[in-house]
Image (cartoon, rainbow, N blue to C red):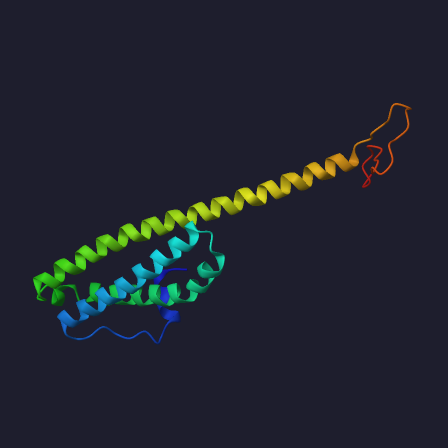
Length: 160
């Protein structure tokens, strides 16, 4: 889903203040909220805490939408914001860089989880295939008879 589509789905997002300094402070608060949510999510992933991870998803989506909306507003007011307090501008940039690091760490944790789930799925499928192969094998005992309890196949495709 594109950023514009996400924003279009969220008509209830509040606009940033008209005052450039206050708008920057509001954006810093939004960044801090999203950063905190990502830190919690990353910790839940590292601890394999599925319950916490799942409960964070709605909040993460809401705060991410707020972040996207706020950044779009700031970008559209770029010239106006250059007149804002330079200390606020520097602080906002520092927060943006720090947030970027947090987002990369979170992404890496999500990627590890995705790969782990993929490996688990592959192991389950391989175990199922191996079990099916074992059940189809013909096993003969020392007397030349098939051993009891095992499924036997004759090697002819049933679809033929």
